[in-house]
Image (cartoon, rainbow, N blue to C red; front, top):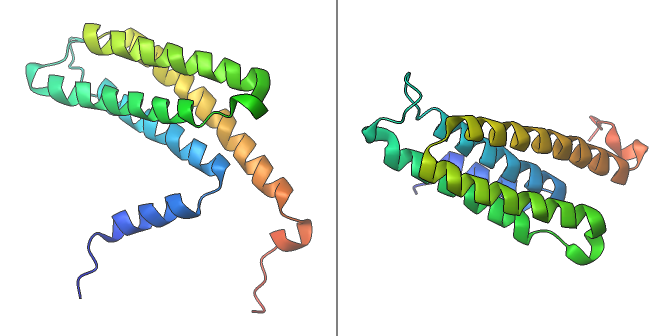
Length: 146
């Protein structure tokens, strides 16, 4: 019996069992990974070689898809001002990523990547605090007695 790709199975399980906060963190990590890959397409002369233009575009588009997923996951009713601010940021990110893709602007890409990293870090802290606060102290310790 063939098991397929064990890494893909692991990734699927990780997504299916993750908390909402962890899922948001995973999306930010994915966006960061794609934007870093896009940044790595630039050559020494700050231009993208013809052989990497298609890959660059794909990385930018994947990052935009992730931003879109973050956008549709916002709960505008419960999130209030925070959700509105995040929506504005996500719209801005997508607009700027479209411009980066068209103009192949490495400086703007670097700025956007920095912003994504900062937001991702903030979500990591929030997700960690939320998950730690939702589990009683007695359950946070490791039970090795079985």
